[in-house]
Length: 383
Image (cartoon, rainbow, N blue to C red; front, side, top):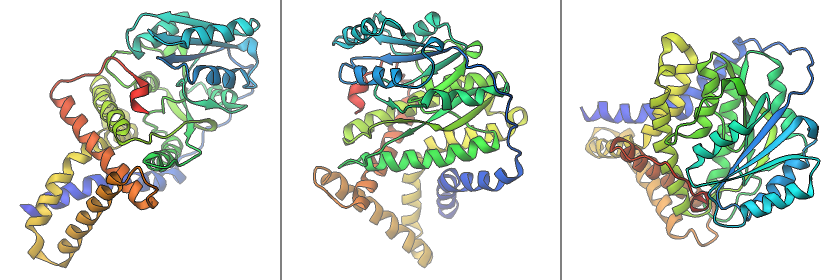
C-alpha cells in the first residue's frame, strides 16, 4: 500500500511538470502550422488596464502604451480604476489631457473588484479586439502589432503575450523569473499543438464578440482566454509581443499571490468544467487537466509522498536515496527562507521559492474546498 501511494504521489507531479511538456514536444512535429492569413487592415483595438492604487505605475504604464507604434487612430485606451484611494485617477486623467489626440478614457469606479472593473471597461470599449494588460507591466515598441498579428486567421479567438522578468532580483524573484521562462517554453509547445490553456494577465487579447461577463471569483486571465475555447476558437501564443514585469521578492507576497491564484484558478475550472471533457475537446482537455488541475493539486501529494517514503526506508536503496533527497530539498528551502534577506546562492533562493509556492498552493486547495472565495483584489499586497 505504501509503495502504491509513493509512486502515485511521485508520478502525477512528474507528469504534470515534465511528462506533459515532453508529450507536447513529441506531438508538435506532427501538427501542421496554421497557414498565414492574407494581409488585412489593422483592426480597431481597445486596450483595457484595470488599476487599484497604482499611482506608482500608471504614468509609466500609459507612456509605454502611447509609445507603442500601433496607429493611434486605431487604438483606444481605457483605464478602469477600481475605487483607487490614491492619485491613480488624477495621474491618468492628466496624461489624457496632455494627449487629447489619443483616445484615452479614465473610469473612476466604486470599489467592486477587478472583474467589475473589466466588465465596465468592456461596456465602454469600441474595438474589434480587446486587449487586457496589468498596470505594472511595460510594453515595448511593437507589442500591440505582435499581439494582434495572429488574428488574421479567423480561427484564432484569443492571443497571449510574453511576460518577461528581465532582472532576477535579490530574494525570491529568481524563482518568478525561472517560472516565467518555464511557462514561456510550455506555452510555445501548447500553441504549436493547438492546446494552449490560458494566458498571463500581464498581456492578452480577445475578439470582442467572444467576450463573456467576468465573474467576481475567477482568475480573469484564464476566464477571458477560454472565452475563445468555449466558442471553438484557438488560443495562440504571440511570443514576440513582449512586456516586462517585476518578480515578487517577499515570501509573504509570493504566498498570498499564489494562494489567491490557486483558489480562483480552481473556481475558474469549475465554471469552465465543460472544457475538461476529452471526448469533446481532445488534447485541449488534457492540457487543462494537466496544466491547470493536476499541477494545482500536486502540493497536496507531497505530504503522503514523504510519509510513504519514510515507511519504505527498509525497502531498498532507491527509497532511502529518495527520502534523503526530499529532506535535503526541504532543508535547502528552509535555509533559503531564513536567510532570504541576505545574498544567498541561487539554489537556496530557488528552493525557498518552490517551498513557498507549493505551500501556498496547498493552502489554496484547502481554502477552495472549504468554500472560501476571493472577490476583491489588492495588487500591492502581492508585490
